[in-house]
Length: 240
Length: 187
Image (spheres, one colour):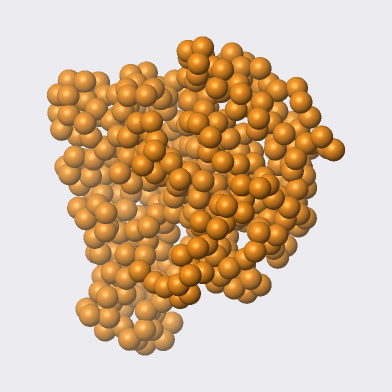
């Protein structure tokens, strides 16, 4: 457990992760395979948006209001990891992304709960997200040949973005190495039960991606921002 | 949590403001009040006419919190004689479904929403299994007790979807009377 409160701006990466993943999940609205999943993904997106707003509120003195932070920053100012900005792909792709991310976000919030007011609440919300992703990973991985193949393909494609999750975030007093080990054990366990193979490719280093925390993003992120920020930028000050 | 009776030694004016703010119905489940839901943390009047209210959301992203704040402000102005109302959202300690009062649980059930089972704060969130359309056996942590059908009282209910019309509810179905119903999730 950490004893030091997060420094100013240290929570920005957490907030940007939540906002960007919320936006990606929102893209499923009207497209999910069944109505229940439509609601599930929208609910998860709402939890994440709430977390982002709560964290942005704490950064208002440094960065301005939440609309300014979300809609008026340029691509290089966002500190989200590259995993959350990856396009939804098919449902299996989205679920593997959900598993990889929530299995990271949940224990991270749990570790921050003594020092970050939002974290205890968010830890229980993200535990539910993680469980949802696990259940789908098991069903899809251990489902039909087609669902298995798609889920494995998603895992192989997204693996390169997972190493970045454990790069220390400046100002957050967290045992990153321990968090990484816990995450890997968790993923190995779920994949084992789902009949999936944990990818062997590098998850960090020269051959992998992952510099979102430094403001370097992948190509799809620009298009995501264009869509997310368009309304606010075209109609400054617009309100409901 | 805040109820109709003021804690001993509390300023009577603040107690009556607390009662007033607590009597506001939940915007999404108007059968229960904010006091019964357990989201009203504190009401204070640091100077005459200036009221400070602390609210905590059920879920971080709950959009109802803004409607709650507006309703509280209105009732305190119109009926509480407040000139200035400040509603602040507090996140810590987090709200738990254990904060819903007995009366709140009874009203939820009467309204057709299965109330959350008690003990969530001790046990952590109750995780439940999932299948695309239905599920009979919780696959994860053992549930403390079955979720009962609010219509017929049967314990034979199954999960349809872990997420329902609002973030705080899951959708279930009774296998005896066949009625689907919302279940207020334990958190």
